[in-house]
Length: 212
Image (cartoon, rainbow, N blue to C red):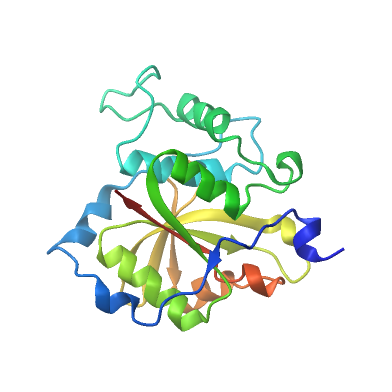
């Protein structure tokens, strides 16, 4: 049995990054500033391996997608736990090995497409191209979902979906699901190293998202 079969991973939707991608897209002035107030969601009690749904929630909320019947805070933002729990039901995530291994890239894509967002998964690409893609998306004012490897070699359970949203002075910021609107500031070299996986096809997994 191969690693991809063991972890129920389907790489048929993984894409190669076009070399000239950045030359085809022009950013609106100040587009990246739209990401300054992006809000992240945390895993409700009792929901393990929920970084996938939390990352989905961060992106959906950024694009103004949600459910009107859910409670909201005074500022209009959805209350964290009901929002994430509804998203888990709606997206059927996490899904890998009945959820014990988190959410697969294919299910992340399926959920984003269900929300009528244009999403693409890029994986197995060189570090330089992966970083350029992330930079281009953020420059365009679009968040990027990234798959972070927290563990040493041979520990596939320590993967986490996060959302990259800001780059400045050789640093990159990501939102994650560990607490209320939690974020991390990374040196870019360390961040790129965290995108490497034991399974080469999974390395550099980033999901770009645009609203049609």
